[in-house]
Length: 113
Image (cartoon, rainbow, N blue to C red; front, side):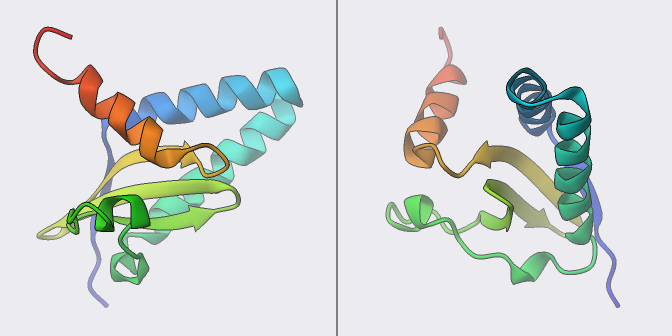
């Protein structure tokens, strides 16, 4: 079985931090720890089965097909595959408007922003 290296980029790491903080505030530290462990475990599964994901509909609608996503509970893990590596780009709460979240993330990266 082909094994891929799973790499979380800085945005995905920031997402995990924000998810942890929100879960700890809303529920408890123990809940937040369990949630992060579950999300990290979902990311690790991409090492052996990255092709199982699908193109996020928000991206497919605008012709962007190089990204895939899997779901973990209410969260959406978006990633790309390059050679033998899987790059996790974001981990978003699927209950929110993901299209808007992706636009905000894109515009934050523009020069001068």
